[in-house]
Image (cartoon, rainbow, N blue to C red; front, side, top):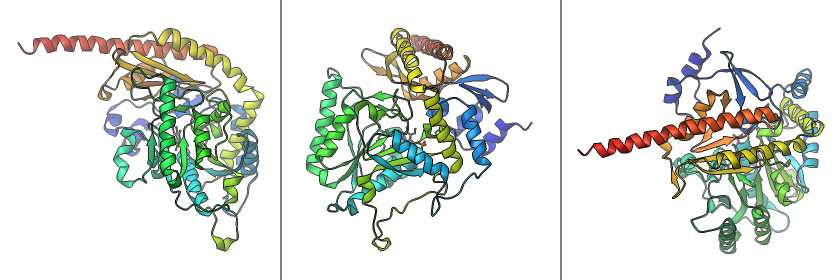
Length: 467
Ligand SMILES: Cc1ncc(COP(=O)(O)O)c(C=O)c1O
């Protein structure tokens, strides 16, 4: 057996990874998976606590999805959607339109969350240039929320609001407007409701003065995942929808992370009965099996692109693997499992189990600043001190250290800075969920207690130094 870790370190450049640390570290090489478990080449088993980067839904090697892919392989793996149709992509589009918020009627496929967002941005831009009821070519700009994350291609980065990831690329980006996010921690003495009011006021002020230049507002409905699971208060999404309507701005809902059951409903927009003009889907769309994404549009948007060929209203955009047959077959099977296993119904107990433990066990820990949860996605924010709120410096890598410690408990999780993310596959059992939470609890305690001791030692050392 070749030494895969060695080969990896020699040749692979990993995403979001300081490669100098990576090549010095001990790489886990995943060989197989089953249900919520991953197994490495050493035969060790780990619970997949972040659903293989938030995408796995029904567990690994789910029989029905495996079989659907095998059956599709017996026919064809891939043929293009440029000039041709295929059964899996057509049937999946029909199914998605039936499931999605009412009014979204057309499905444009791509292959990652970022590309679904690029498609939505370009569609919104082009829509205003050529809509039938009076084109508005001046509507070229986008509004996004602070702390937002929509993927890593340049258009998506252009509407991204995470300093650490996005700032460097500023000179390459188009100029978006950013407004405060309803999910961010309000300033001291400001309630969440007051903060929401201020966010809406700020958006309204912007749209009143500059709405004529704005093509669309893009949001992650309910939860800003990559920002550290920032949960917006109820009513935020529907209020944003109303403002978009009032000022004739399209609403793009990026449900790449929150779609497919994560918030307890199939789509997050359902919680507030909102239909966006464009809806971005990815990650869990194929059950987390294969790269597949989709951008859904309303008739109103779609019809602006219709005309004689020579009018050049066509949406000139596509990817080689758009509507890949294997991925669409996996997605259809995943949607079947949702129905047959009554996944969302059963999930309620797991959501409650998570909620109970976050509240009663994690929240009281001295170095937990806040626990946040929406449906089946949660974040635990570690802080040096809660009162007054004092962040751990990022260089201390507290989140990363907790995740490293969790490995010793047979758990694989990945942090977002100082936030520990808990996002297991929706199919996790009560016992596995207990095991996951217990392992994370112990890891948080060990690492933060260790850091307290370090701090104390540091203080003592600091005192001695001057003498
Ligand atoms: C809300 C949101 N949009 C877009 C993306 C990008 O998806 P992908 O990594 O598949 O390009 C992500 C990824 O985490 C996401 O959370």
